[in-house]
Image (cartoon, rainbow, N blue to C red; front, side):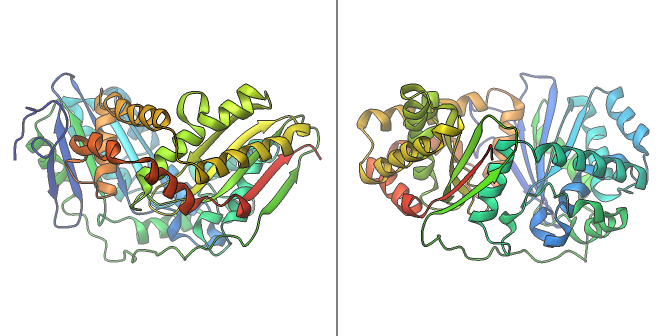
Length: 426
């Protein structure tokens, strides 16, 4: 495989992919137009592995990793990064822990050494864990009075049952965070941080072979016999009818709406078609058809758009809007009208062409810098898209037809079974 960048876009010919014996996948791509190197990666230690009563444990564990290790206390760790002008960040979501970093190419060994240290040897000092917990509790207490946050939470908790991981925020709650101790973080780390399934992509002014060798030198000896098996998400069924929930917030002058149903995962065959259909519905231009009708034509909303989460599991396909309280019902009705239009009528030739151009046009923009390339390589590996994904992306998008978008909308969207959450004045 070639180890020098001889093609204009990342491809099988210039992406180096190596799998270590312990399961770590390394992706390296040379970019000699810069003097820096960017790292992006993930490992399987998200909130899907925590119990409901420990909600927030995975996220708090990830946040505390850089507060001190066996070999570096807090000041030493951050001072070492500051001395070389490097960045390193780590955070946890539902399915995985993500990390990213940037440094001058000559300082990649230092960056990887620090990453190795914080992933494998954190100490979770009590004082730092307590500070992190108090910060989160303060943020969550403040969020209790935020209509947009409360509508989103009510929507998620109504759409997904308490037996489903997606019912909960990975960030934790006011009820669970006070019970999470440093000992609990250490136990979670010991059980769930392991190399199997870890991905690390490195892009920049470093030879691919050298990048692979550096990762191998730091991580090849990492093993964890206590690692747990993958967790399967429970099967989901649609509501039998519309479900509505209202959250009253005294003193508020604006209402927030979040409504929708369960959408496709990133692995679904019709994911790309659903993504384009969502763009038509509430993303393209000034937030698609929903934005055009609700915000521009009727002047009902401060914001109005739709979103398709995707990801490793069946995330929500939702519509959000912020309106004056007296406009809540009208905004909901008009949004549902646009959903019905999407699932009853094929999109126009113009809508299809515009969105295909939008999707294929924005991909090269993501590849203009090393950070965008590293993130794209991470996505390609995580969702098994193939190293030729970027080369074939244009053709895949332009193969989608009006019927494909129509069927994707019909597959996931039933306006008579929507979950509708509203938060605003009592």
